[in-house]
Image (tube, rainbow, N blue to C red):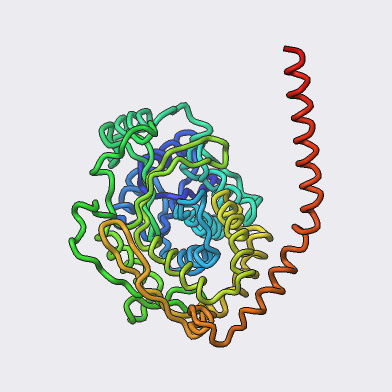
Length: 417
C-alpha cells in the first residue's frame, strides 16, 4: 500500500516543489491541504496547481473565522506583542493550520504530515509542536532539513527544471506570509538590516505620502474584550477585520520594520503590515485602561509578555497557555465599550473613550476636592514612607563613614607627595 502524506500546501515557491520532491523521494501519495486563513489567493488556481504537480487529492479548508475567534482574538485580549512590535500574525496562523492538517491526515489514514518551513525558521517549530501535541504518532517530513537545495535560488532552479510556475523570481525573491491579520516580508534586500525596504514591497498599506490629506475617525466597539462593531455597525469577525484592514491600510497604519530574535537563536529582519490589528490592539488597550483595576492591569502586562513569547515559540497547545487564557477571560468581563481613533498618514490617536463599566470618575479625577479629603493623603504617605525613614539614619551613617575614609585617603596621599 502506498504511503500517504498530507502536505500543508500554499502554492508558494517551497510547497510548489515539495509535491514532486515527495513523490520522487518517497514514492508516496501526496494529499495537499490548503488552509484559507484570509491570504487572498486564487483558490481554484492553487487547487489546479497542486493537482498539476502531482497531488492525488486536494482539501480546501476555510479557517478564517476559527483563526480569528480561537487564536487571534484570544491573543488580542491578552495584549500579547512580541518584542514590542510584532503582532504575531504568522505565529497565530500556524497552530490552526496544523490542527486541521492533522485532522485531514487522521481522516485519510495518512502516516505522515509535511510542511515547507525552512530549517532555520520559527515555523518548523510551530508546526511540529502542534503535530506532537495533537497526533504524536504521525511521522513528520520536513524537506528543507532533508534535500540538497540550499537557497531560494536553488528552489527556483528546481521549479524551472520541472516546469512548475511560481510567483517568486530572482528580482523579487521575498518570502511572504499573508492572512487576515497581517502580511510579512522577508528575504531579498531585507537580509541586510541597513537596507531600506523598497517602496513596492508594501502591499496592504499606502505610504504616508499617498494617504488621504484629512484625518479619518474609526470607532471600534468591544464586548468582554471581543471586537464586535466598527462605527456602530455590528460585524462578524472576518468582515470586521477586513474593514479595519481597509481603513488602516489606506491611512498607512500598521507598518513595522523589525529585527527580531527567532526561537532557534538567530536574529532575523522582517517587515510586517498589520493595519487592522494595530487599530484593534490600541483600541483594546485603551478600553482596558478605563475598565481594569490598577493591580489587575499591571499584572496582566506580565501575562501579556509571557503569552506573546509562548505564541511566538509555537507553544499554543500547552496547559500553560490554556491556564493563562482562564486568567485573561476573567479580566475581560467588564472590557465592554467603544474607543474612537483618529487616523492620519501613518499615525493614530485616541479621540474618544466610553464604557458603562468605566472606573474613571470625573469628580475624583478633577482638580477640585469635592468628594475627596486631601488630609487622607498625609497618613497614606507617612505609612508608605516608613521604610525610608527607618533606613535614613543608616544611610546617613554610611555616607558619613565614606566621607571620613575619603578624607583619610586624601590626607595620606598628600603626605606621601
